[in-house]
Length: 66
Image (tube, rainbow, N blue to C red):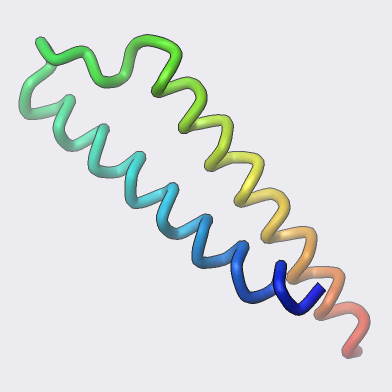
């Protein structure tokens, strides 16, 4: 469990930063179409699942320490 507690937050941050970069690039040049298609949907889904998993793991560890 310690592995997940160390890796998941970093993975969540990396995925959220990747999403932010895609959104910013799409705002400046919408003709590229970065926010349409399967790659964006997969990145968004991975970021969402990773963020929820991070919240669950950290909350469970916090409740166990209390």
